[in-house]
Image (cartoon, rainbow, N blue to C red; front, side, top):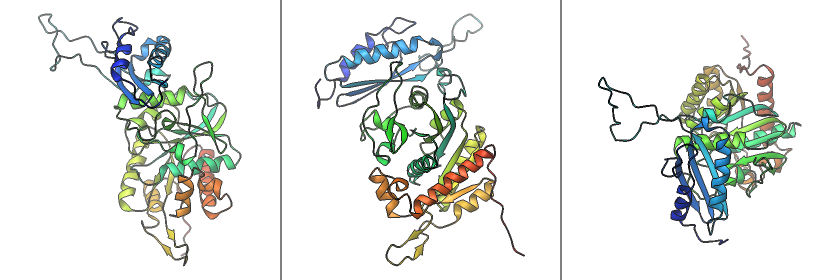
Length: 388
């Protein structure tokens, strides 16, 4: 195979249109089933928009597309992601028996989450608790928190996996220091990578780090479904899911696809971040996912030279917001260069400095998460003791 040269997209499109769609017999392109093509060097990713009612034919189609695309000269790796697409409704008839045309002359297709691609809310076999780590906005240290939370749980004797569901900006491969394409089983399931005793799956294993994932919502939802359902997770006590920031398709897909044990919201203490954190709590409440609590990240900065404590982003805001929203405050993590350096190096602080104060802070968060789960997933604020 040619290594450094980019694959010709026209050749990929030609191959795709030579593969008949399961029902119409038209080529996949002509049938409108190709949602996108991503090419980076010798790596090709094809997004197919499919009707979940096609059932077993989907797996045969996926295998055929990957096989034929992989045979194109220069292709080193071919990956297919599938997203759900409901068939267009029959055109409405007017009183004279004529069909109304769509304003743009195209059939109207109702799209939504790929709910039919796997049974709704069906549990992941062997996985006891699925915990989403989320934030209302980016830049609050959510991925670092998710990685260290997972490692803290593992250090407490639990079997833990990490799913990086941030399709647009996967970072777990960097934070946990693991790379390479996952192997597959005889049943065509991906085998998660191993990092510091964790099982890890990320879109970052499938595409180069500098690739921009310019995907529409259905394609993102299909990718998350596959990384949930088509991975050999095995027996896990916890699957920690690093969510993308915001309150969009990815969060909705996860909430509708598997029974989440709950969500951990990460925020900095500043008011702007807390507004978005509150939106995250509201979103999970609306989709009936328990909010396990809020973590205040970048809480205070302690100067390494003089030990003076400075609340750069404020302090205590997340705890106050948790009390206002009626959820538990899970703990605070300081703003410290060591946390950033160890995450960039692929050896998070819980692994790099397991006996230090920062690792202890993450373990305290993990203990609070377990306490909420033991209470049935109902997060209640810790009691406030007042002395009169």
